[in-house]
Every structure is written in structure tokens, then in C-alpha cells.
Image (cartoon, rainbow, N blue to C red; front, side, top):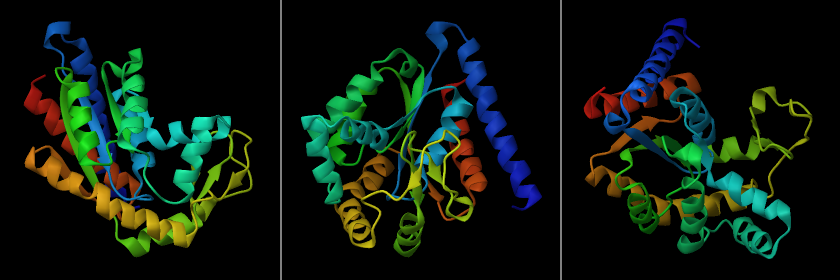
Length: 247
């Protein structure tokens, strides 16, 4: 990566961390929480960026995909039903997904804000999220834009840890994850299912872009850039929310 770009990315992330600390230092009645929603097709890099932003903000990264995969691994009746839907490349029903997320957002660590990866995926879910965070602080939506051909290539090469769910970079993939789990291809990361997931995304999730644009909280980022540059641009967008809310 270009050293100047890396330096700019580092500065942007440090600024968000500084603003997050300043927010926590203000009196309770003057604090504002920032809730970030990452939008983009499967393989756009939402998980990577969610983890980075959550660390910078000091809030949890909440991945609905991880929650659903844990349910599948449990072998419960709910998990088996979820598995069948996921392997067909379809979306989980709005009501079920909203209930899962609502329970997670009530946990203590999410009271100061969060970064959501995988929810909302429909306009109906977006309305539900607005109700869940009403009065809790600002919301920002970030769209990671990546063309279909790049998504198919990324997901076809992706390997994930069977134990912790870590995504391994294809260029640096090895047999084992640092946690000791085996790196393997997900059942739904074959080209046929990937393209079906992208069609589902365009049909059900793409309208979210218009939804959040109309609310003037949408920030679009080119997801084909290096992860550091993407992080820097998202960090600047979040910084603008802190500035608007007042430090």
C-alpha cells in the first residue's frame, strides 16, 4: 500500500478513536452514541470493516451472519431451519431476524453504540432498527460498493475458520487459523449460490440504499479499494457524525 495512503488511513482511524474517547468523557446527559450500519453485497468486506470500526469506536461489531452460523452449528431445530435457508441463498424472514438483533442490542455492551454487519437487509428491517435505536443516538449507513465479478471471485476463494469464523485472505491462506481451527470453504460459497445471493441482495437489500439516502445518513465507499483506504473513508464519515452531534 502507498505509504501516504496508509498514513492518511491511520490518521482517520485515530481521529475516530479520539472522538469516541471525548464522547465517553462528556457528562452522561451530553453523550451521543453512534450506530453504524454497513450495507453491501456478500463479500464486500463488511466483516473486516465492522471489526476495525468497532475497535476504533470501542463498541461491539454485531454480525448477524455469525449469530446465524452459531445457531446452525448448534444443531437446534431453529439452526436446521436457518441452514436450509442459507444454503438456498435466501434471506431469513424479517420477523425472525429482527427478534435476534433486538435481543442482542439490549445487551450492556451495545448501549454506547455498535457496528452492524448484515442487518438491516430489507426496508422493513430498517424501519424496525429505527424503532430499536430511537432516542439512543445517531445512525450512519455506509454502502460498500463492489461489482458482481469481483464479489464472485472473492467469495469463490474465501476460506473461513471452522471454529472462530475468521475470514482468511486468499493470498495468505494457510491450513489453520491462528486459533487452531481448520480453514475451509463455506457451503454457500460456490458460484451458483453466490450469484443467487447477489440476485437476492439486489432484489431485497438494494432498496436500503435509497431508504438511507432519503434520510441523509448514507455514505458510499468504493469497496474495491484497499482495506486501509476503505477504513479511512468510513472513519471520516463517522467523524462527521461526531462533529454534527457536538463534542
